[in-house]
Length: 183
Image 1 (tube, rainbow, N blue to C red):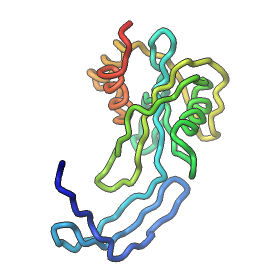
Image 2: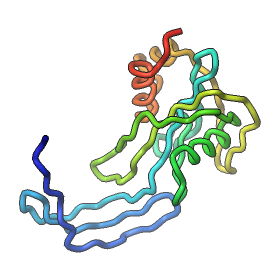
Image 3: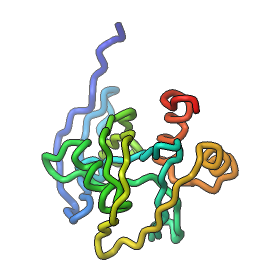
């Protein structure tokens, strides 16, 4: 049984920016060690990441342009959760929108904070199984290419630095290490 840990006391909180994707909040805090300081936090409703596994064991990735990186990245299906939406419902919605696939089963296998230094976002990574193909329904700003890769190919892409999206690297390595049924 670990010691109970103190958390920071928020003395004052100011919303600096509230946008459609995220917000920014500035908190005056009293840290557990007694330090009084200012912390800026990016607010976010949370997101889901989907690792869709086809019956033959291949995993579906998508490739899209990510403006912040100025490049096209291969990554797992992902998206923001709507207020009140469960991870499974959000995962089903994002999977359908971005790939056209529907899944019989969704299960959360990782629950992580991708950038805990300044971002509130909590990310649920789900396994999607029992897939059936259909028509993708991307949002207007989404130009998405989807492709299935074998686990061997994915491990090679990670090793060679060709798969650079952190949530995808984490999800795939966890899946390969702990969840995958040997084929």
